[in-house]
Amino acid sequence: DTGVSQDPRHKITKRGQNVTFRCDPISEHNRLYWYRQTLGQGPEFLTYFQNEAQLEKSRLLSDRFSAERPKGSFSTLEIQRTEQGDSAMYLCASSLRAGGPGEQFFGPGTRLTVL
Amino acid sequence: DAKTTQPTSMDCAEGRAANLPCNHSTISGNEYVYWYRQIHSQGPQYIIHGLKNNETNEMASLIITEDRKSSTLILPHATLRDTAVYYCIVRVASNSGYSTLTFGKGTMLLVSP
Image (cartoon, rainbow over all chains, first blue to last red):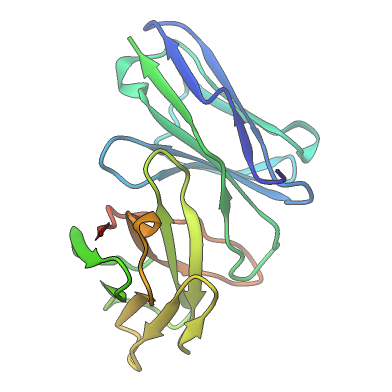
């Protein structure tokens, strides 16, 4: 399977703990996106990378959130001092085209539950 | 990016065409119309996109009105596996930059036997 993969698929943690999620984009895709989706809502944009550079961050991305994409390949999203409001599905997507209407390919998501 | 309006839910009988409407009356000339769908517990899946001409691919057809203020996604022969939330998104796309996807709540399409 050469699609976008995410790990883990599910994560349960206690409030105050740190968690880290990983996203492996489709190879050769230079753009990588993180979204968050809560129950009953559509996905909300968090941040975007072009290669290793983080080019945009949503105001939803508080200072407890940090994302990296070393070497422009896989990406990690870390949440420090988790809160119950962080419970959501975290989705990663990648796209190839540097410009124009390139579609985004989404992974299956990581479902986070903060107790 | 322009805002879209979609019905909250729709029903369709298996084997019939599903026609999902979307209003985007404030769309700009450089904004494309995209459709994604999300099957329960999966990530969104790209379906189709268009600028002003009607488009067709193996999954669906996209009909955009001449004034571009609305569009319809057509699934010609809906199956049970097409049950999903369908998102209509308008998005700026240019060679000088990019635009993220702004999802609304979408339309929940239920295909019944």
